[in-house]
Length: 107
Image (cartoon, rainbow, N blue to C red; front, top):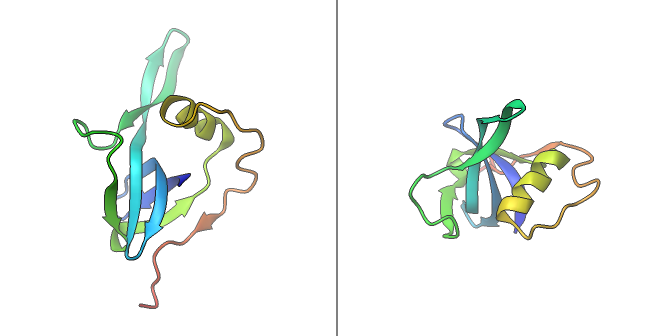
């Protein structure tokens, strides 16, 4: 599984471990970016996408509801990975942030 940003047709942007499965995108540990207050002032943090669910369960999202997937900014990738992933911090992870289409509009 890869950690990516997933933009949905609802306008929501998720950060999750994803894998393409036939006509679905499987997401694990999906979060959204949220503004938080820190001692230094406003900052960013994560909150679960579906509050009250088991973060480790696999959730299937139909490709019909996915606009695109994108590489994450290195700082956001590292923050997500340290909290929800292996904890490893990557250097030069997201050199190019080009969007990759998930939806096959030809079908």
